[in-house]
Length: 314
Ligand code: G3H
Ligand code: 13P
Ligand code: ZN
Image (cartoon, rainbow, N blue to C red; front, side):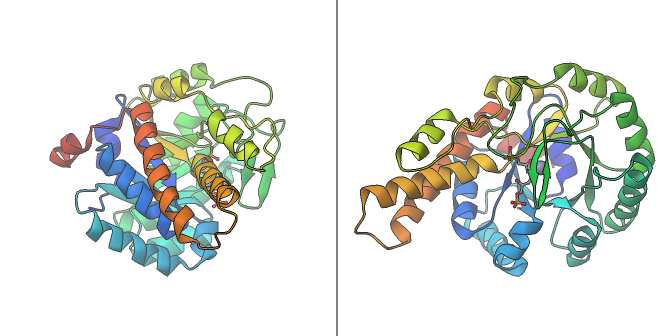
């Protein structure tokens, strides 16, 4: 069942976080639904601009509708990840999405508010929610690469003002994470002082943490043992994610970890079966392994086991 993000956030706030997982293809969609049902968790499907153009946005939408029929127990929202004004307006017009993210965090503060405000007005007319971003994460987003030195944490005072003036429904904040598989080059973990300060200024307002992959070291080792070259890959400590999930961080974005599972499965499968050229054997293993990863991650987030309560609450 596709639902709006707002009741999901309301149910989760302060207790647990909803996993927001990026998808690009059929195998990811199947593994994602299975893993969330196995762990009895509500979830958010995220579609980036890159994912929308990888095959075709209509194909992804049709596959999600089909998955909704295949897994009638599932409770989820569909969300545009890191949209610009054009892609947000496109998703709002399509009527398929439950929420969009307008990422104008690279713009000066006032311009960010102005752009976000425009998206909020259009989205709210259609009953859709808007995630905005304030602060700058390091790492790679679409075609933009931000070095750790150029990244900066969200200013809590500005966050409160931004939320009031932009009208956004949730806010992606920079708490020290970065996108991709190479995080925390300086060794610093999450900035809990910033999370605490923002939560104190905007109690009950859902905060979003991007760049939340934990980059499991066993995945990295297996990828490298099967011919990969991922030296120094590192992610967010899972205990820190669990803690943040009780502090108003209500949506936790994960993409990279899913790619790592995909990479490990395919590298090992073709290494161990060099005569094979069929896509289905690794594809089948991937769906099972990705489902296992999702089920595990939902335990970390605290969303595992919440499905029945969410269904009653919405
Ligand atoms: O934050 C960005 C997401 O990981 C999406 O990545 O733009 O390569 O699909 P992508
Ligand atoms: P990761 O690269 O840590 O998976 O972050 C994904 C993300 O923030 C998607 O918006
Ligand atoms: Zn992101």
